[in-house]
Length: 114
Length: 112
Image (tube, chains in turn red, cyan):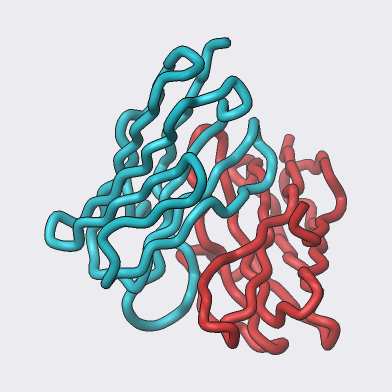
């Protein structure tokens, strides 16, 4: 176990709705990254938060937004859900200050959009 | 878009055999990592190799890196049924954000 937790485990939404996914980072980690993994594919980087500021973003539209809190936990918000948003959403925490890029992943949230 | 591509996409071997997976990437990197994923769960970090390293070992794992060919390989020796999983290589680019760029993965099946 990595110590990174995500909630909820599973979620079913309909097109056009909004969703919020949550992630608690491993103790001592100040950086959280979010990834989207479609079925049969590798994870794709959505964005990263470092000390409550966005620290890089992948090729995802603005309806994907995030937040990091003072305790370094994080939220991923997706507005106006589309069928293609159905995927496993993974968060990962890391501590770049320790001079390592190793990321520690949570178990993921499976989102189904109908 | 994917930075790396794994080869083969799927691999089926018998317990006790060795499994070799390859990864190619496109741009210069700071380091390359291998992760394992059991059936749609979270990813588990296996090993990290830096761009100035050529080979690294961890238990039954051996990773090589050839920056001139932009490729890496992961060897799992004496495989076990519990090694059945998907394996992904991930790169951290030489500059800019410290995000991981994943390949599409190799699905390994180890038959008992």
